Image: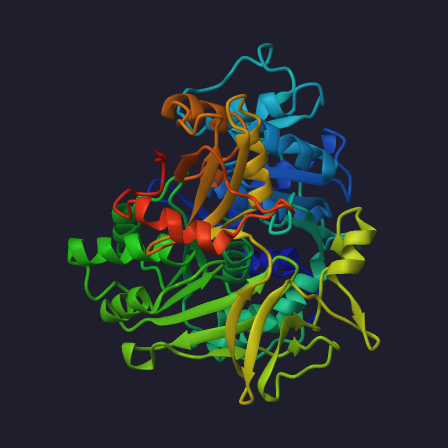
Length: 548
């Protein structure tokens, strides 16, 4: 069924206005209220000059307002642009400019970051009061409208969106500066049909009426999703959108930081059936909380979905041990896919197999698909429904979405070996990207931030293995005398330039990096040399260990 999420959401709201759409520990947003607030917000955005095709940035952690903003944008043909709320001003501003953002929605707690980032842009803002400080005099913030005011009017949503609606979803910066991937709004629903209906064994609707009938059918399992990964990540975003298509409920803990014990209790109390995580970084503290609180079996949780980083067999085993939980471990990218999935339903299934999904291929050096060959080695690709490309970047679009024998593909750079039975062994990505807690960090950016310090003359950045986060960002840095820069001074220097997850958790100082005559660093040797100096007992989040 080709169509729009907003059409299904509005139809579900008409059929079941009092069903809970978004639930937090403090409030319940019914489908009727969701539609009402989305219409009011859309009306406000139009008064600010936002038109179909314009970008609307959402710079926020998971909150009910996030869903309202998505709904308003999709229904009116505005392009929602989820932004990483961990970005600092210097990181946020160029992305706002790249995406040609016309207005920005943010919580008050991020006001300082936003105001510095938009300085001189004269960008209308909508501010969510997440601090409880009450209204702010409009004279003090002339370009800012409080959320309550922006959603206080009455404006019906269009019956169906105008043609050409898009989602502009930024990558994590795997190959440098993040780029906005442009998805046609109607294509997203087409891509997600199997995830919405097929994975649950439900009939695939061909019409809007049939979609509502599936949501209304008492035999349709109630879907209550708790996205613990941020909605700026595609898996959390699409899973939440799919939940509303089924007439289900999205649970949210409105906090920029994971409180694993609060999440475990809320999942049980609110009847979560599905939880979205980002690898061990979220799954491990969650299952530890479940165990320590004695919440076994883990409520009604029947499914955990992960994408974006490694979910280890050890953590999966602990998840299976706390309930009858199926774990879906996806390999996907912002540019397309998913490419492969590892599904385990009990500890007996571990470690499981990474099985290619329809549309996925393994391309050898001649770009032949060798997925059917045992031992076939190549780069994973996908040739199903794909995004339009990168926003206003035709060259990078051609590179990332090559036409192979007349068929458009996306090839993100993951190498794999095919087993000949539809499964593959993942070898890793050819680039030097560091994947830490589901966030992708490009070493060159961190190296440049380090080199901006007047006492640092050389630097190399790479990932080192970590049991919880998959990898942690590590830097080996040279100063003229090999002495470390003061810890607090270096932290302040990097904090002004990098989001917290990009900052090295380990910094080792030397007098030289022993580069070759060609300027190369032997990374394998360097990693082996610094490994004994890295203390694995240090919690990566919020810490930085400087050693010599």
